[in-house]
Amino acid sequence: MDTVSLIDIAGYLPENRVGADYFAQFAASDRLAENIMFRAPKFRHHIASDENAVDMAERAIAPLVERNGSELVANVDILITHTQLPDVPILGTGGELARRMGITPDWVVDLHNGGCASFVYMIKLARQIMQTGDASTALIVSVQNSAGQIFTQSDVRALAQSAVPGDGAGACLLVKSEAAPVLGLECRTYPEFAGDMTAAVDPPRKYWEAGTGQLHIGFTESRIAKVFARGNRLVPEVALAVCKQIGITPDEIDTLVTNQPNRLFLRNWRDALELPAERHPDTFDECGNLFGAAIPVTLDIENRAGRIPTGSLVMMSAFAHAGDFAGAGAIRWGAAPAGV
Image (tube, rainbow, N blue to C red):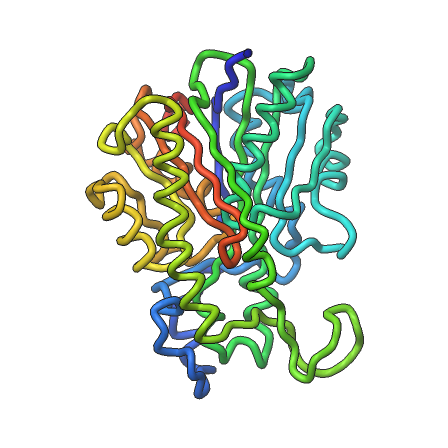
């Protein structure tokens, strides 16, 4: 099998940096307000009112073009995107992104599942396509754009859940190369949990039907307890599976990058893998929960800060939704030098 490498990564955070006091002014009585799942970050970034998912994707990709040249990006064979909140209900971001960039990949895939673990899933899909065909380059893009749109609605912003998400986008380049190899990947689906993440509107209606009430996530105490238990287990579980796959022990992980749902998950995951805090980057207090964009944005922040040396072993691990999917991947780091 041809080796596939992650040669560069970039992230984008909207300019609108929102403090916790924004939500505090609207906070109403919410029985879930004291739940550990909804302890708010200090800051998060919100998409601008005149910005859309494709705008965010383009801004995340721009540094990749600057560092690697327009020709490489213009000729990518594979474009895979994941968008938390598609601007058009039946379309993802891929087609419009390709049109704006003036590219014609053989593969344009809008991945609508995978959630917070979608970045790993997209890498796995791209690598599979590259290893079984003629494709040699792939552009992976993840956009989280629901924080400043869904969670700032006049009724929803009073709920405890609304202060946690942030908006951002991340992108990476994959090529057939030995430069920064993807060493192993593990993706697992748990369909028995797929119905535990729901959207809610009061009074009830289908999300696309006209009516009163604003769309938000349907949390209950019992569902939260189940999600917390699953998340605690799944992220270390898939990371350990990759460790076994590539023949290492967890203490050989130089940098663990996970999704960033809340502080307690982050602590529990590094404790489970017996890693010190300095090996597990935490962007929660600056970015909030970035869902599927958390891994690439965190990697970009750490790389630009010079905290991921070339040749180090990076483990990505995440779980999605209420636990219906989890994925992990290991990379021998060799992305573009920090600050370039």
